[in-house]
Image 1 (cartoon, rainbow, N blue to C red):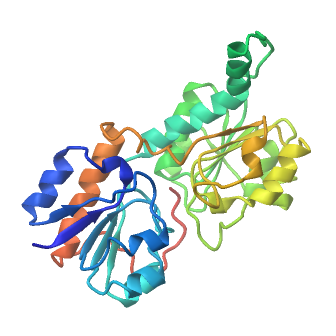
Image 2 (image 1 turned 180 degrees about the horizontal axis):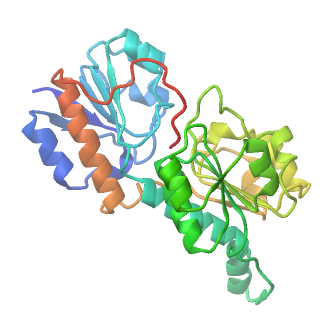
Amino acid sequence: MPKVFIAPATLAGIGGPYLQILRDAGFELVFPSELRQLTEDELFGYLKDIPAALAGSEPYTRRVLEAHPKLRVIARAGVGYDAVDVKAATERGIAVTITPGTNQDAVAEHTFALMLGLAKDLINQHLGTRAGTWPRRSNLPLRGKALGIVGLGRIGKAVAVRGACFGMPLLAYEPLPDRNFVAQYGIKLMPLEQLLAESDYVTLHVPLMTESKEMINRRTLALMKPTSFLVNTARGGLVNEADLLEALRSRKIAGAGLDVFEQEPPIDNPLLQLDNVVVTPHAAGGRWWPSAAANGRRSRSSTRRCGRASAGEPGRSRTRPKPWISL
């Protein structure tokens, strides 16, 4: 019986339709013993003789792929290909699939959780109240404040819908815009530099590619208002963390909400020590609630893709470089 390796720790021991789909396809299920994201070296202990992997954000590097010749499909329970060396996978005939359209609402909600946490100084007020200091102070609104959305794909659109509900003027940078959606929500399209200069809240929703790597850096941070906030629920590599640290320490921007980091989990990262930063553990996609709708849709979708691809059927497989497509 062929085996499928189910890497996301949050699916371990959790029942659901995806399990039956895999069993009906004739797979034996293999789960990791670690209840966290696996490292490159740890993958070696699980992928021997495995033809199919239902993947999270663990790194499927060239080294990993070359050491496991029986691997035929990597079905990501999420969006984005940056955790997989797609070139190496293509060379070896390994199908790489994603699950678009399954977590945009969860990410958009999390984006606003971070924005509200920053605007209302929620963490500091929570800690002060618990400590008995009763730190009543003024806070900031979202209403009437310009929301700059970098990347107007499925997730960016979900953020825009919620921003409109909060009464926020909507700005966006998007190389391939959906003109009907833009018109429907009155979104102002503009170059990235202009968006950074005019926004009160900037939120990132683009893939990590050569063109977007460290797009937030010393130069682009200098364009932002000193009263503005940066939110990143996309990929850590979009931001130069050293430059962000300097901007936050010197109050060149007011604060940042970060769900993703260059290194995950972040180890001894000085950003974690700042009082104008709100952080979460790459949780925006809803994956920490395995019974939630987002995780259920993702697991079922990636499971079906895993079964089809391992059987040799075509799917949404990344086999060559593609143009910019926002998350």
